[in-house]
Length: 158
Image (cartoon, rainbow, N blue to C red; front, top):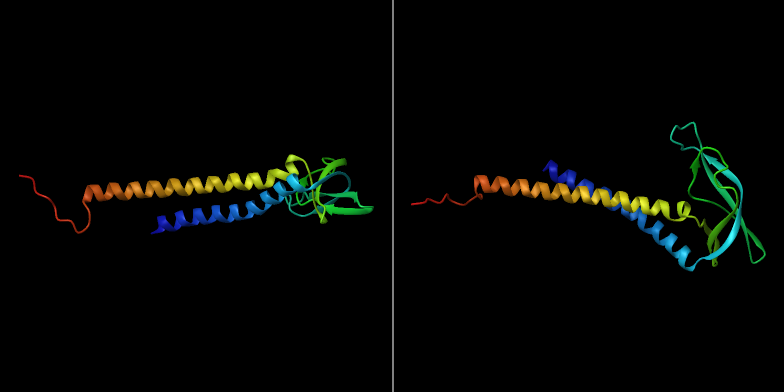
């Protein structure tokens, strides 16, 4: 019974991670396919707690671009630990023309890295769950073969 709970928990973890990856992936895919591309400028970095050492802040780029004569400013959802100079100056940006605040820096790291890592991690959990389920079933079948099926009388050989 405990084995089945562990297997179910593994599949549940995989499903939760995949459920968070799918919207991020489709958002990135939509921006890359249908978004408007422009050039933005990193004007600053917003520091937030959450670095690996808890003393080092995560730095989130604040990007500005112009659209239809208006200045649009957004803070990238993906931050980096360390010095603020990693993403600076002019950067390529994809944005939704109907809602320009929905934007992302259009580099691999900022657009694709997060959803792809989540998909990879969920695949590993699905694989572990499948492996545990298969090994559990083969152990059960081996046990039945050795003991015989429950409720089946032993056969006698002449």
